[in-house]
Length: 212
Image (tube, rainbow, N blue to C red; front, side):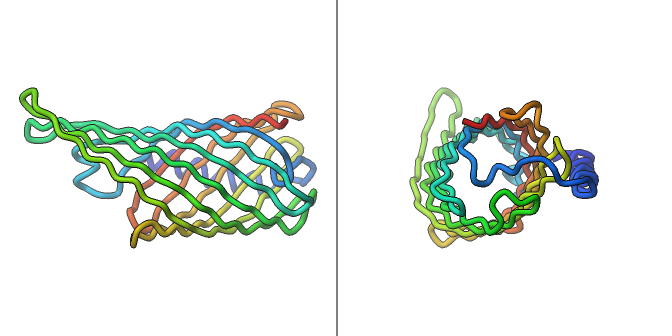
């Protein structure tokens, strides 16, 4: 991923955190969101063959009580490329359910912890000279995470998080950050990024959130 994009995101987080605290966090709210992202693969072979991957993601957040949310998500990732005359097409579909406990409801700084269950289906199709072959694999995983939402100004919301995911003997440890701007009382637009320390994948996304 473009290094300047990551530097710009870090600067936005720093500037937002230095503001006053009058906006609203999303924790404790009912909302839906949609996002589009780009992934730069940390693996050199994948990066050379596939280039960047692209992802579309949607989620529904449901508030259960003053301290607990459930977030249901669905994401789709795709990438394609070629090497040595062989065409490769990779797709992934992931469904997740996250239980979130937050400590300071309606406060300008609201830390949280969470637990996640997920199911991931990956399909790889290889083709050459009109002949193709494909394989698919479905795996389930669990994970945990922690982070904080910060009401940085009347219009700006910052979210920082760390996540650990375990899927079929594979582990990942991610850090994420996003900065959102409230266009009005119901609609938030945001940019964000993440880094996976195991795969060294780097990601960036833009998203739109609508409170219900």
